[in-house]
Image (spheres, each protein chain N blue to C red):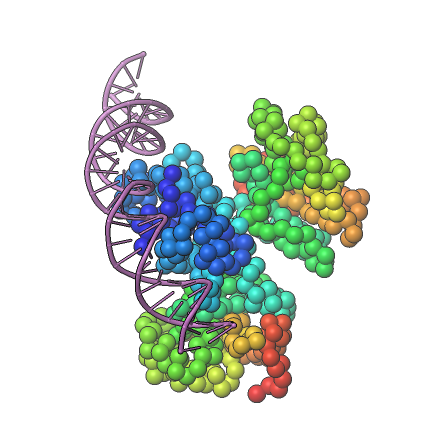
Length: 251
Length: 251
DNA sequence: AACGGACATTGCAGAATATGCAACGAGGCG
DNA sequence: CGCCTCGTTGCATATTCTGCAATGTCCGTT
């Protein structure tokens, strides 16, 4: 709706891919250099971008500041932090905290694996719903009706041998997930990585999902499953911290 | 230079302070609701902001993504990470990585203290040059001529009893810092916190500063000084990692 | 040393674009 | 049931942005 703003934001997104020159940016957005220059100047004044040497621009430090401040607001993140850090230290594996955001899962926190071979991911990264453990957990937590709507809106790209590729299969899987209270990703997103996830609840239902991811070369699926109790305990602890109503009986 | 962009960025900065309603934002920027609404819509399309309930807006997830990606680029950060994490684990105290950005120091990485009482700070936060250990280290690393220019451009707000409040004093302090190879902040920024910092060098000189911060209630200045060898070792290790030329002789 | 090129930068005029206003609509509260 | 508040939209205006072309600057080259 606002052209110049739209272009400016596109510039910022371009710069996320690494430093760029003026005309690279101009080409990418499809406007003249001078226009880009003027937008960059405004962005620079707000520290959203920074000049890097004479010919390059890169993202500025305001981004760090804003992102950190915004993350601090996200209540789930703060509440879950202790439990997840503990889980990470006990297991030594990568632990993720993810929430649902229109049609995708988004990682809002991450605790790095202690192993040399790690999974690549990053806070702010988005992941598909149909082939990740966190995605399954988040969608499974929704009422059946919304599950169906979402399931039918997905694209089901076949990313590996095991990827679920149809709404029917997916809905069936969600059913199981909802029943068991956890989800498994058996190399469905990336060939060489397995993952288990569990829901974290707040006062009004599930607000996020916690997961443990392990490269197959480090541990097989059965070994990963042996960590399930730890994961569930951590998710439970985080849920209480988030104000979940009845820590109550397992089920 | 670009009005609408300028306004939009101001909106984003407002939202960094927490969720806001439409007219709060309109009031803050000094434009009509409808204008704010349109800007927000564009921002929303790029995930820079998010609707929160019917009456509120907050920062969106694009910020996390961008900030993380941008941080990954910052070479110093990646190179210093291992050494600083180790330092953090050995000492148990807050460890910061900071670099110089026009007239201020900016924290580009942080490792949290293990103690219950912690220092408040955050990645992306900016700190004054005249009363922080990292500030002193960063400015002391510059050629004397630039030191002077910077020293004379500062404001020297007196934040505590011990804060340095004049360019002359500051330059003398920088002299000492450059000579010793480390800096001390003896409650000069915040009454109750002491700090020591050391420079991290790359191929072409100092690129950042590493620091250890400790609340006085946890350890006194002398105890903090006993960690100096650890700090210097970590800074040295990080420097090598960053491509510093001569790991060589201390001096 | 002078030239040529690449790049950033600026002035200007035209026009598209953003803005403010006012009216409409929806939702909540009395 | 009606009022009031808040979000939303259509429209006319003129402000603001854009593209172009010329200027300036810094480089490497001949």
